[in-house]
Amino acid sequence: MTKAIDNTVYDATEAVADNATAWHYCSAAPANHAGIAAVSLADVTVDTGDYTPADGDVSGRKTIHGSQTGVTVDANGTVTHLATTDGSTMLELTEVTSQAVTSGNTIASNAWDTEYRDPT
Image 1 (cartoon, rainbow, N blue to C red):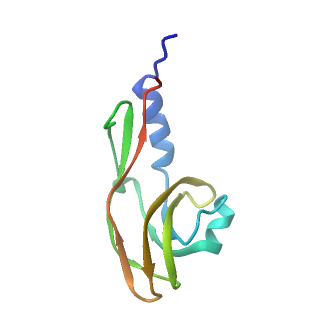
Image 2: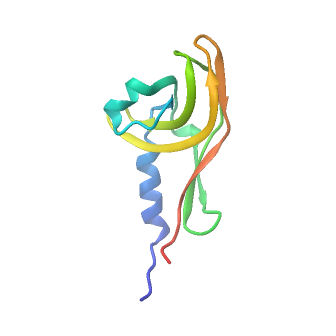
């Protein structure tokens, strides 16, 4: 059976994800938006300029999330996940390389992708 998804479907998905207004650097994977507060060690305000849509590396489409620098750490711990939120919904959650952080210091994160691959 042939399966295909037009790029406009991926672009609509990206548009929702790009509505994120904050990224939270978390010590564990929150189960939902309400759970972010309990595990957030640092956060940064973002806008649509922090996202770039592009063709996927393998297929489909991807969103490139821009790097962040000078993010102030609010609590001691080890960052293991990054959650994006629009203020009421957790839009994305990704695992990141563990990084120990100390309250009052700043951290940075590299650019990262979310890829929406074509079905096989």
